[in-house]
Amino acid sequence: MSWTCTLCNQHPNDFRIHVSSFPDSYNQLDPITIIVIIVICILAVASTKGSSRLNYIAYIFHVAIILFIVIAGLTKANPKNFTPFAPYGPCGIFVASSILFFAYVGFDAISTMAKETKNPPKDIPIGLVGSMVITTLAYCIFAVTLCLMQPYQQIDEDAPFSVAFEAVGWGWAKYIVAAGAIKGMTTVLLVNFVGQARYLMHIARTHMISPWFAKVHERTCTPVNATATMLAATAIIVFFTSLGILSNLLSISTLFIFMLVTIGLIVRRNYVRVKRHHLTETST
Image (cartoon, rainbow, N blue to C red):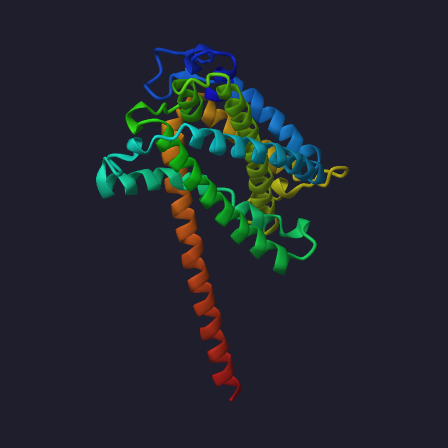
């Protein structure tokens, strides 16, 4: 939403519907986000291969935007902005890290696409490790660039790089940044919709939830019911909830799920080992 407003030279609240009777953080209704989610859902249902091709083309454009932001931003770098280096101390670093963790959501979607790859044992590990390394490096470079461009007290929460470029006298650059951010967010949404829908489909095939979610469209071969369910659930939540609450909720839920998966793997391996040992003793 904020990047769309930047392109239109408007404040984010100008496109939201304020409902005073609703509690704070839930009273800024966001209809534009609903429209974007519906479009992304249609793309996800239309074709998996088409979505992949669209992402491939979009990533080329996105890499160009990233290179522009880093190179142009570093030309306006001021090393004095790094003082103080950690204004909130170690506690502030850990708090920020706990919120930033949601940036790593999506890597697990690679594993759900195993059936879509030619050589899963080779392609999945390369995709997971490679994308995580590249993304981590990109985040670090972005953080360094932003902090060198502008003091941390002046960084805008809604559109940090757009405001930073405007502050250094490159107001025209904020439109390039905003266009790249919109492209990046829509691509992330598309990947997440494809991945999360397949989560539901795989769970439904194990009969842990209704098999209705496992239904695949005859022509597109995509899980249409699971995708539509994700659309409805996502649209209801984002329509009412502020970004701050969503980021905190997403981070803690992701950490919790990853913890359960890790514990489940440990239990599973120990179970198999104990059962195998028991069968060996029984046979002897």
